[in-house]
Length: 364
Image (cartoon, rainbow, N blue to C red; front, top):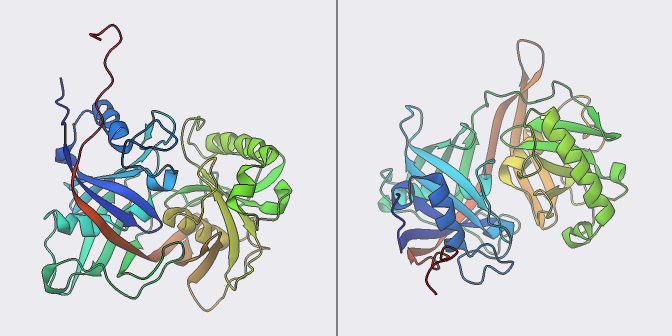
C-alpha cells in the first residue's frame, strides 16, 4: 500500500489570476489515485465552500501544481497541473493551466530544483499534462526570488514582478479539425489549440452580446444547454473523445472590443464563466483571431504592425504576443507566443489534510 502522509509541505501561491497549492512530487503519494484522494482532503472537496481545506470555493482557487526535476534534456522541471473540483470528488489532469504555470519557475527556485541567477533566472518547464514546453523568466537579485515589481495584470490588485513566459511552437495541429471554420449544432465555430483546446464562437450566434457579466451568463439556462451541446460535439470533432467529464475544450464567446483591445471575450471553464481568461486559453484565442476565415476574423480589430493582441475579458485585459506561420501543407501554425504574468508567494509551510473517511462497516 502507498503511504499517505498526515502532513505535507506546501507552498500556496497566486499564479496570474489563479491561486493554487504547489507541491514537490516527492512529498505526495506516487499512486495517482491515492494522491488525488489526499488532494481532495487538502483542498476541502467536495464542499461548495471548501471550508475544511485550502480551496477558495471556486475553480480558479482550487488548483494544484506538482513539480519535480525533469528527465527531459530540454527542460529543468516537470509541472503537472491538477484541477480539483469544488463540489465533486474529482481531480482532473486533462488540461494545462497557464496561470498556475506563472508560479512554477519561482517555486522551483524556492525548493532548490533550479539554482537562482544573480539577477534573473530562466526555468525551462515541461507541462506534463500535454507534453508542451515553456520558459519562465523572472527576477532573482542576490540569488533570491523577488516577487515585488511594477507589472500589473487585470484581475489582480496591485503590482508585482513580471514573469515572462515564452511558449515554443507546439507539435500538434493549430486547427485540430483541419478547418478554419466548422458548424456545430448549427453554430459556426473555430476549433483551435495553441496550448489549450478552445472553441471560438461569436456571442451573437448564441443570442447574447458577449458583454454580460459572468453571473448573468451562468444564470442563462438556455445558453448553458447550447454550450453543453456544442462542447460535447466539439470534443469529438477535435479528437478529444467524450469530454462530458473533462474541463476541455474551453468555449470562448467573442464580441467586438469595447476598451481598445482586439476582441472582447467570455470564457467557460466549462460551466462556470471565467472572471478573466486563462493564459493558455488566451494564447489559443489570439492565434485563432489571426486565422483567415475563422469566426473571429470579422469581429477582431488587429494591428498589422504588432504581434501584440490585447484580449478584453470581464475584469480587464490580457496581452498576448502571437504570430503565425504556415506548415508545409499550407495550414496555419503558431510561430511565437509569449505573455507577461505575475506570481506571489502567499505562504510556505505545512498543510494538514482533514482525516480520511472511515470505510463502511468500520468501528464507530
